[in-house]
Image (cartoon, rainbow, N blue to C red; front, top):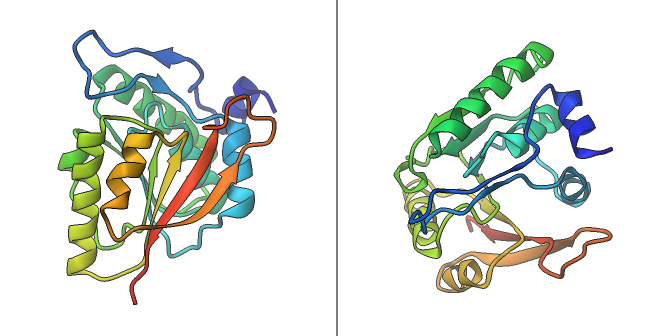
Length: 200
């Protein structure tokens, strides 16, 4: 299904790119994960009703709405670009009219990813290279602090993983548990890496 048609089925608008103003080197441009990639990921990786997903750098909300609709689990999207966040809120209003039957909450929060207070129920975290490796390291530290206080198994899902993110994770207890390639991918990096910290 083409990107725009998939958007229409969820009653959202997420197609397109948005660059940050010059000088905002800590944050990467808005670009949504392709639907074909999400379809492939979730053929392999399953979410349970007990899972709660956090989408860091959620943009206009494509991944958040897709997961919420497909698995009917709670999802929180974090976005720091004000205009993009407003567009995500508009998408949520439209999506929720279509998805009233789904009881699981979907929340969109405006703010810096490193300031997000990881909840004890959060256990799945999604990243499509939304920010610098320095910020990523802070976010991962926040997740690990939460896990230390409330032990549980948590997963990190990285789409189009960059080397700097992988280096950050080499110095943590997270272990790579799966690689999911996207059929027909034009580039080798077009894949998902799934890392896990398992409560023993």
